Length: 356
Image (tube, rainbow, N blue to C red; front, side, top):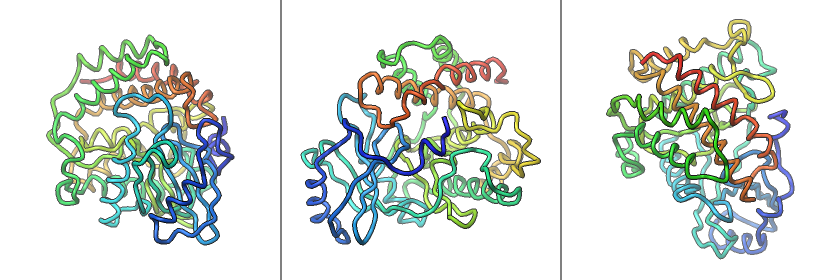
C-alpha cells in the first residue's frame, strides 16, 4: 500500500459514516461564530479510529472529528477528551489546531463530535521523509524532537488538565488496558505472538517512574502537520490516546520508527543508511530528547519498546475487530490489518532480546 496516496486528501463519505449534513450545517451556524454556509462535507482518507471529515464553506474550511457509529468498546473514542486536551494545549501556544466547539448531542449527526481549524501544511507519511535533502531531514527530525520535549515540559496542573489521568502507575495500567482490549475483542481473533506478549509484559513489569506529564500516545511524523516550506511543526494531530502518564513511555513509542522496517507493511527506518539520509541515529535522537528534558538516560527502555510495539499491534487488532463489526473508519482498514501479525512477531523478537 502506498501510504501517501492512501492517506492524502479526501473522498466521498462512506455509507456507514454518512450523516445529515443539513443538520450539521444548522448546528454549526448556531454554535460557531465564524461559520457561514453553505457547507460541503468530505471524509479524510486517513484515520482508523475516530472518523474525520473536512467541512468546506465559501469562506473557510474546518475539520470535524466524531465518535464512530455502531458498537464500540467501553471507554474508547472519547471525543470529549480530545477536545479538552486540544483546548488546554492551544492555550499554551503548543502547536495544535484551534478547537471551536464540542457537541455531545447525538441527535445532530448520530454521535458526539468536535470542530477545529483546518491547518494548512503537509503531512509526511514515510519515516525517511522522502524528497528532502540531508540537511532538511535533519532539521525535520530536530523539530519533531523539540516538539515532543516541549509537550513533556508542561505541568498538567498548571495548564488545567491535572485530572486528565491518574498521576502514577501509567505503564502498569496501560499494559492491563491493552491486554484486556486484545483479549476481550473476540471479533479480531487470536494472534499467538500477542498471547505470549501478554504474559511477558505482565511478568516483567518495571517499577513505576513516578513521572506524570501530558502524553500524546501516538506521536509519529504522520500525526503532524509540517509547514509547507520548512521544518516547523504547525500542528500535532490525533489525540485520542492522550492522557497523563510516563513521558519516557510516550517518547519510546515515538522511537519505534527506528525499530520498524520500511517497505509495503511499515513506515520505519530499520536497515536504512541513516547517515546517507541525514537522519540522526536512535542514540543521537535519544540524547537530544534527554538534553531537552534534563535526563541522562531513558529508564526501562527495552521493556517500553516491547510494550509500545505490543500496544501498536493491539490497536491494529482493534481495527480488525471494527472491520468485522462494520464500523472501521478507513477504506484501507483491510490492508492495515495485514501488519498485525508481523508487528506482533517484531514485538516478540524485541522481548527475547530485551535487557531487563
